[in-house]
Amino acid sequence: MFQINLKQPISIYFVGIGGVSMSGLAEILADAGFRVSGSDRAKSDLCTRLEKKGIQIYYGQKAENIKDGIDCAVLTAAIRPDNPEFIAIQEKGIPTLTRGQLLGELMRNYDMPIAVSGTHGKTTTTSMISEILLESEKNPTLSIGGIYPRIHSNTLVGGKEYFVLEACEYTNSFLSFFPKISVILNVEEDHLDFFKDIHDIRNSFHQFAKLLPTDGALVINATIENYGELTKDLTCPVVTYYGCHSLEELALDPTFGADYYPKDITFDKNGFATFTACCRNKADRRFTLSVPGIHNVGNALAAIATADLLGVDDEAIARALKSYGGTERRFEHKGSFHGVTVIDDYAHHPTEIKATLTTAQPIKTGTLWCVFQPHTYSRTKSFLTEFAQALSLADKVVLADIYAARETDNLGISSETLQREIQKLGTDCYYFPSFEKIEKFLLENCTKDDTLITMGAGDVYKIGESLLKK
Image (cartoon, rainbow, N blue to C red; front, side, top):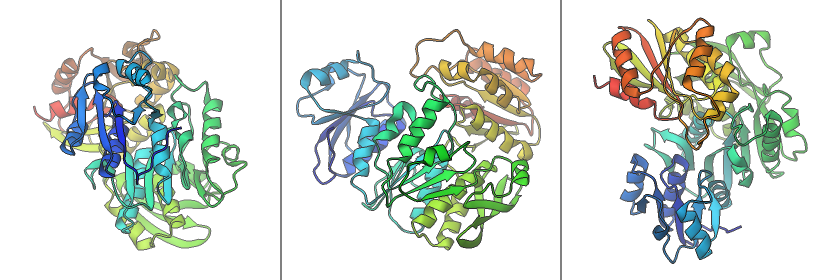
């Protein structure tokens, strides 16, 4: 495999440079003195940011973009063999790395690489750990899967000791990593266009855990079913935390046998929790969050456990968790129109949808509307029943067309299929084939004091942003 040394800059080309992760990696390398260029299908805010740093970006992927002198090309999982740039790269014999392999190579250049994995909650927990390290003046380098307001970016180039990043399981990219501390937040069925089933997914997370060296450590959610299967054969310490999902769950089992668990949880009018973090080898500590929902208590416990492994001062942890207000598209308050509160959320898996709508329930006033854009045909088909059940936590649901992303086969599934499943559960559900028609319907039917959540991993956020201009 082609190796990257930050002390020896080379010329590197990104095919698909405008993605959240790819743009962040491009920025890290550019700041390290690498000659960075790349291409994408269309201009975006992230591309504009890179261009301001002097990075050459080509719009439209063409063979002639691949110039002589490129030492290495980085490819996303979405690049197909018939891509003209990929063909040109192969013909020129240019070495290639996947996005995951590049991340792994970068990790080799840092003393303490910290990889945060899981089906849900990666961006939030990565950001919490980042906030803690920044608050304690550790000068970390960061690669986050969303825009983190404190740095107004998804990337921060810091020192060479700490590197905090998200570890995505899709296409097993995280198996190319070299972490010193890993976090596993949860393991559920997802990305079934790649994985065979939950057993295949669990095996990948087990292999990810086994990447840790003897002097490393794993932080893992004790509520993961049979989590011991994921931690067997490890030679490093394993630290468990209680990733709680509801107060009812806590009442049934207050500790879940975890090393870190919460007690005395209270919520303010915004749904922000204050709780006591209990640990078997530390005194109890009281923390207050500025992000809503009980699921974020679990994310915070994972961040606290990681911070303790790094020896961060308790006061710095408390200040960081209090100041952390979330990342873009994670229960993000966007504003209001005609007295209707607009929130945007990235949730695109039934578990995430349930967490978001459960968080909204105690803080809503009028009707809770959810405008959902399903993400990929394969995910919609695999979780059709689960999507319907989770979305039914809203008072009224509006569906947009499925966001195909990387897929071309609709598998015989559509948003109208999901609409019928939701209606069977007795929940009012509407489907419209365009954002324009959705906006018109919402303007005519949302009333003062209602809450509107735009939800999905595609471009559904544009609906809320458009309504805020009305």
